[in-house]
Length: 431
Image 1: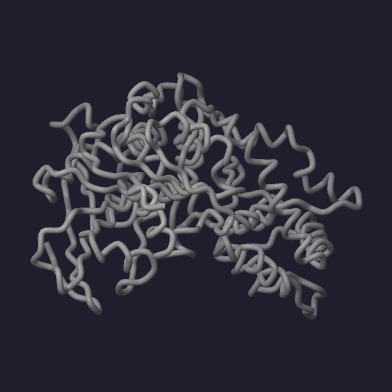
Image 2 (image 1 turned 120 degrees about the vertical axis):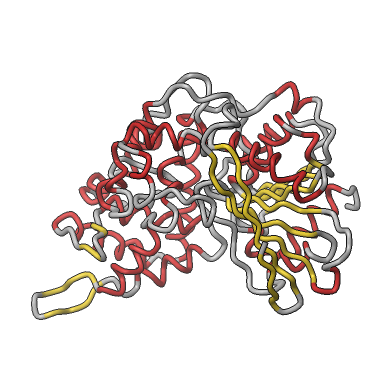
């Protein structure tokens, strides 16, 4: 262990060894990283533990500087563990550089099949007694971290004292097709709201899209296509996302000796917003997190998009309507245009074809739940369907919801202490 200080805090880095395949505990082992954070004034005290599970999949836990955002509220009463879920951050990272160590695409896909919520929860259950001495802990799950928390309630509720979920109540039985069939109308509403706020962007987006039909500019190896440009709609799920998108669009073109071109500034901003270089597991496993019931996910977002022709850029340009952005959807073309994903396209295809996904949730166990649970449900969340979330909330015994339109999906980041404070009050029946 390595301990050090930031203002007012003591941080301790932990590394744990866990099985790659929990069904084979004596087999290959991988390393999991977690960062413990406690106020300096309470470093020697016995405090209850709070485990934070980040959203994603594919993102390591946030790196805080001091007691900022929700962490400042948490450390008032908890010893916090920020866990890098397997394959992310410092936890045996999985990406285009490391995955070839496994072998070819088939071996890589088989390896990544162990990186879903079921394995993450079993990691947590091996780590918990090493830190808490066997005592249950509070879990705070943001987005996909909430999916993991519901799996935790299904598989190992004895390890939990309390569960807090922000924007992360999954459907218990929806196939990936159902998830995206619900998603595209939500995305369309967010795009309509953006254009109502910034009507000047309608023509600007049409101009950019038309330019991309005849050109394929590259920035650091990332090829920008009309579909890739449309995927900027992922920004619209955050509280400030519409404003960020507007400012990104306003400097799209520059005049050059060769005519009007897309500016380097714009291309770099698009690449930064849409590349998966920093979180490739998001692209590789995004549909796999919904895999259950013996059915392949089979590029669900791509197939379902055909049911919504209004998202087709060529159709929009042929008429006089707006070009619609897309959002949190992964498509085969991502693995052609993004250099961080290009070497992994066969691996992704094999994961899309996979049919042996185990069930993730236990409805009977959830219906008999005894763990106090509170969940923030964002009224028109672009990333997690509100109707699915509320249906799941009603299926988990004793779960209390806080339904709000004050925040978007990033409410825990944007609202910080207020969101965590509210959830703690809800779960403790103080409101």
